[in-house]
Image (cartoon, rainbow, N blue to C red; front, top):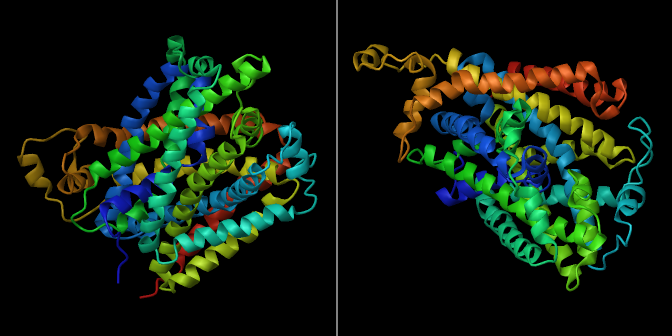
Length: 509
């Protein structure tokens, strides 16, 4: 029997949970500050409307129309594009392998929060005591067993959440989406009442409109939207395949997209309010305490928590509990997408697919628990997001816009109706738009066709070419070329080969 969501609310919460992750807390605020402050919200909103939501509608429509996870749904568009579906899922596998390790860090820091075990020098604690970081990626060192223990706990939680597919996911997301939002509001309220908070918020939101003339700001906006919505992983296609036939498509895409981006904005308020307090207490300008990535969550924030005048442990527990829940539903969405695709093609039992996926990902993730783990995490993360996902996004647009050969479209009737726009030829992208509109309370127009056929491939293509050029000029992050190859290019090559093998494998009926 085909898995289904218990309700529309379960589907929306699951999709929101998949999209909302650690990047909403530690990436968006920094990107916003670096690219014009409050002015960045203008290109960000444009990017959301012209690329983020159109791609969300595309993925929801494919999953809903064919009732199949990503590989099979894309295979219906054109047989060979099943490879793209498998590649997207493998990119998700690569990401969840290290994402689960970050969740392990959160589990450990949740424990440290009870007695503020990180002490006064949070940077030394994180890098030297907790990670015991080595000198370079090629110096692996030993495995950190406290991190491995947290990794095992993480995978137990992830597998438990998807044990019965959408039936259990639909129940878990009520906690993993709603509770983090409650905690986030608490942290915002606490943050804005701290001394110096206003300076932090000014730093975050003061518009620098001159930045809008810089093309890099617009590329950063499109990049942030693309990455933050979990587009290109095959997750949203899979989740939409669990919808009932009469379910809405377009409204759901808008709801999920705006909820995700509202979380990013509110997360920025919490982060910069507390950074303003940190700057006030330390006597430093706000610009010197702004950090991106893991340092924000595991160095800067613990320092701020220790400075709080009252209930520091409570706010430490709340912060890391929020990070855990934000991360855990993103993680199990990636696993569910992969497991559902394996079940669909090879007809194995769900329990075997879930446990098999978790065990393999846990073993692969051990590389990120070594003393060089942070380096490898950084390299793999960069290549998965800046190359893997961009390729998937571009090719999905091409698949629907130029290769879609669905046979039940009445071309003559379309032209007889007088709609002869070059952006509206129904044999390809328009047929999918018409399907989405037929399942939605309000409809989308030709702007969606234009975005899928032209705008998104061009913008994402420029991002891709720019990244390729940068990597030819210099190795990523100053790492050696060998480390960059092993953690980046080689991983992508292996995923392409595995995707082809999975595609060519015989489907069991």
